[in-house]
Length: 622
Image (tube, rainbow, N blue to C red; front, side, top):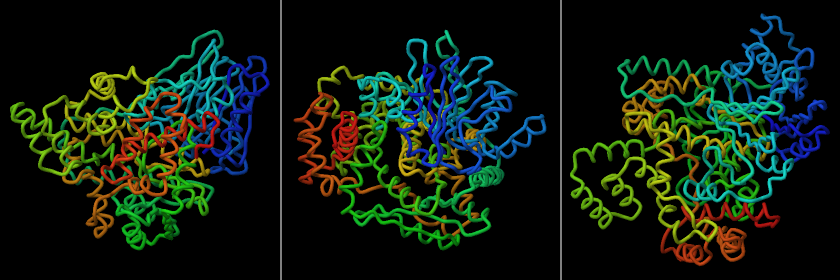
């Protein structure tokens, strides 16, 4: 696990050295640079030593020093690739996975990505062809930002690192800020800064002197089939084989390793398989809270006893939230409003005391149909085909009058006539969509309509015929890389911990796409994963469903974070610069503090954005 960077106009490596220094947290063990002075290309890396701790210094070259590579991430199938490369006559001088890149490039050129199974962002400099190749893994587990201007290219693993080597100017992209407030994250190719882009998952970027950088796609999450008729027992057997293989490959490390364990299906299944694969008791880590009712510590404790793990449990006290949460939100390279980010960071920091690598359960919900809205959106579409629109509208209004606000809104959304994509958008961003007109300041007056936002989503994942499959695919291409994997990467890398995700093995993803969404979403969702868990741990499979690193944000905002939130509304850069309307934000906050409404779905993104922007502007908003 590392951070990488580079520039095509850096003959003395000054920009690369500055970018490396800005991401020391990603690789505290080592750093290196390589410069081709004749062309002016420099690449660099910060290293968290995981594979071949002694011999894995980066950047790393082929036998004659004509091809150089830097890698962020892990190539899980590198032992097999090393065997194949030696059989073809290549001389490998280390045991590190980075070295396979230069030799695979010699064999296959840009086609090397098809041989890789892993999470990665890499850079390869070919001095013979004077070509720079930059690539990102299939799902976007590892980040990569770039800036292309005046015929040159610069890139880095984090936006703050890129800004340290390139004069980006600090101007925010209003469309990206709008994206952030709608979704709570930055999807797609936009970055929060106007002068930078994100390399999309499953893409390569090629630069040669005198030519514009060329972007090309090599993989994308496959379209789910509408129906499948293979026996369920056979599917569960194949799932077990693929998942066991994926877990096994992600346990390879030359440093201590552990497993994040919550009380739900995803992490329990990974922990159970890891325990069977390991020759010694695995280490498991769980976070809980001393307020609210969302802690899964007790469930994780039971699972740990069943699999015989060496269990470690962290309670995140309310008293520490005021200091810890603002610091984490401000430290990100671009804002992220995922409420579970502080919990993820806390458990990562806790685990880092004992391990360097942790295995998590990210991706299971998106690939195997875990989110309840997949089922509800499919039901809404089916209902719309059979219920007359006037009757549906009357029913929606009746639900809103008769049920509690949160539940009524969800059920009314199902009954109310509407376009499936707009319904999805209302479901995932409803409260924030509703307040945009009043909450946005003058810098965001030219916001996109709901119809325009829905059209953008439609273009990303409209291929599947099945409604649930459509939104599973959309989440794999939008929510998963934009939020879930960003959270996992940044929260863990801030404390120099590597997080691996067995569910995102591309062979497992391609298998999941061959199964009907009806089967995936049957019952409580993740039907195949539940069947497999029942085979492995029958008692565990009967326990309550996962609550997924949920945190008591409403209580935090009324308690330890109230002063920080008020400070943001009264004096933060977000309001001062005109991104947020101070009066509207103050009114929302006051209603929340008085307990009249729970407005945490709106206030939390404001807090995260404001703290991030204050830090960008040189204020100590945290």
